[in-house]
Figure 1 (cartoon, rainbow, N blue to C red):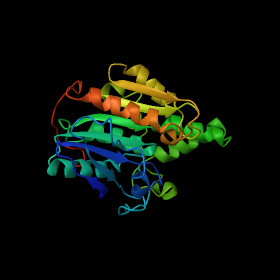
Figure 2: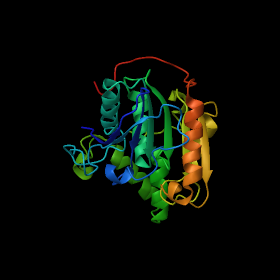
Figure 3: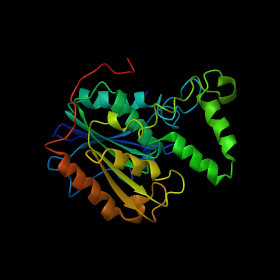
Figure 4: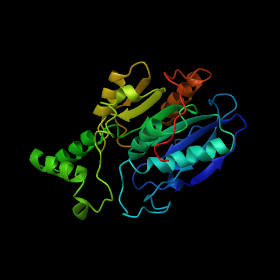
Length: 262
C-alpha cells in the first residue's frame, strides 16, 4: 500500500510524484531533488513522495522480497490514484535508481494513461539484466554464474531458493527492448561513472526513442548523487524540461485503459 510521505498542495491540478530506490526511505527523499522554488512552471506542482512495499516505511509484501518493479508499481499507481482523487489532472513521475524501474512499469501499466504526462529518471534501472550483469562483473562473477543467477530469479519453480512469491520477468523490465511502449516525454539524468547502475541502458533508450527521451549525462556524479555534485544544473534541467512539457505533452497516445493492478 502506497502512502505519500509528504504532500504539498498546488492549485494548478499538476502533481509531481517522487519514487526512490532500494533502501531509500521517503523522508530522506524530501530533502532534495523534487523541483521547487524559482524556475517551476507557473502554478507549481503538488509534490508527493511515495513509499512502496518493503521500503522500510510502507507495509511489507507477504514474501518480504523486492519485485524489482513488477509488484511495487502498483503502490506508485495507488499514489497516482490519490493525486487524481484530489484534483490532479496531470501527473509527472520521477524515479531514482530502482525507483526508475517502478516508474517505468507504472507508465506502462497504469489506468491513468490520460493523466501521466511525463517521466523524470535519475540514475535509473532501465534494464535489470544490464544492471545485474554489471554488478556481477564488479564482483568478478564468471559469466556462467551470472547466467545461473538470472535463470534462478526468473524460474517459476525456484521460489524455495529465492523466497519470492513470483519469478522475475526480466523481459517485461527491459525498457530498451520495450522502448516502443513509451508514449510520453522522458527526461533521464545519469552519470557515466555511476558505479552501481551503468548508464549504458539509459543511453540505449535515448538512442531508441530520440523523439521522446532527453538524456542529460554527467561524468563524476556517481550513483544518485547528481544533485549533490551540481544542484544548479540538476534542477535547471528538470525545470527546463517541465517548462517545455506544458502545455503540450507530446505524448504519442492518449488512452484510458484498465490498470493491470485491477
